[in-house]
Amino acid sequence: MNETIKGYVYRLKPTAKQINLINQTFGCVRKIWNILLLERKSIYELYGKYPELLNSHQYMNPKYIKEQFPYMYDVDSQSLTTAWLYLKQAYTNFFNQSHDEPKYKSRHNPIQSYTTHTTNDNIRIEDTYIKLPKLGLVKMKLHRALPQGSIIKAATIKKDGKHYYVSLRVEYEPLILGEKTFEKAIGLDYTLQGLYMDSEGHQADYPNYYKESLEKLKKEQQISSRRVKGSSNYLKQKEKLASLHLHIKNQRKDFLHKASRYLVNTYDLISIETLDLTEMAKTKHFRKSIYDTSFGTFTRYLEYKAKDEGKILIKIDKYYPSTKTCSQCGRERDMLLFERTYHCMCGHKMDRDLNAAINIGVQGLIAYATKAYGTDAIAW
Image 1 (cartoon, rainbow, N blue to C red):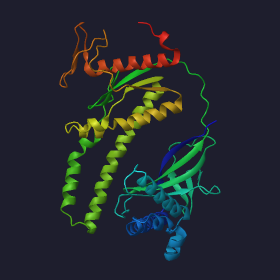
Image 2 (image 1 turned 90 degrees about the vertical axis):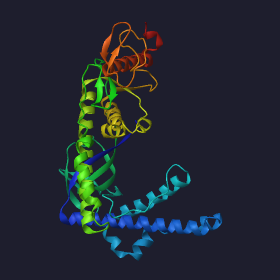
Image 3 (image 1 turned 180 degrees about the vertical axis):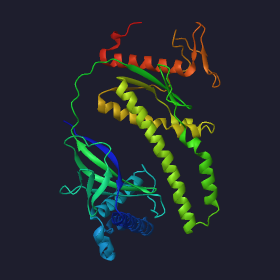
Image 4 (image 1 turned 90 degrees about the horizontal axis):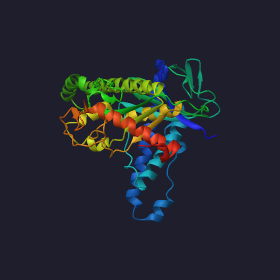
């Protein structure tokens, strides 16, 4: 059976001594990255026009750098090796033109992280603690258990704002789910106000956390603009602003996780529309609402939760005119953006979002039946 790899994120509650060592590791990883990046840039400027000299150059490795900076022996060696490997991969991606050129890392970035790998069971969960290299047992908020029989392959320790997290890369064999009875299906239509309208007439009522915090953000940004760049007060205000953004992000993620979990637990088949959110966000009147609702993140949450539970998620073709089609008779008519009620020649009258959600739900059922039983299973 193919093994599954997933990530599990937990909040850490390290002691003051552990925080100092984590921050020291961040600094060492950042220094190795910047030293190696400077070397690569310099060598390319010198030998870029001479491929033979460029390919013959022996780049520094973590062992050599640690000999120059002995304090690096105090931190986890795997984290330094991983940073070296990540930079090599980043340059490979850059030369393959799949990614931008790697950039120097700054100590003032509110998000700092390092990755370490499991060797000889040195990363493991013990009760409500996690054993991490060099750090020992770190208190954690174990809000959900790892899958039974799972193996921790790697751990990324991250500081986001004032909080510390560990992201575990876990490998396990998925449970074989028995065949489930298909009972309930639903269609979801994306809306700027409320995230989605479902085919049963219920709206998600997403609170638009970013819009609600705009005044507070504006105030903090004004204070930040009056600080002298680089001063201690400027850095403190920058951290305060980062914490506010993190709070908004966590509110959004919490809502999206709960909404997606409810849908997956309640319905066997969920149909959603496929949207080009990047293109939609180019319209300045919709940009903030699109980024605030994070429908793309919501879709991703639905995908992996549905897969884990053996449920079905169907994405409807983005060119299907769900808003223009009458859910009663199937006729199409043009709809202007300000029209909130759908009126059809057949006399059908309905909220435009509900009408679209019903159409999406029906198309999802058709797609499922076609795939499961073939085109002959659908008769009109």
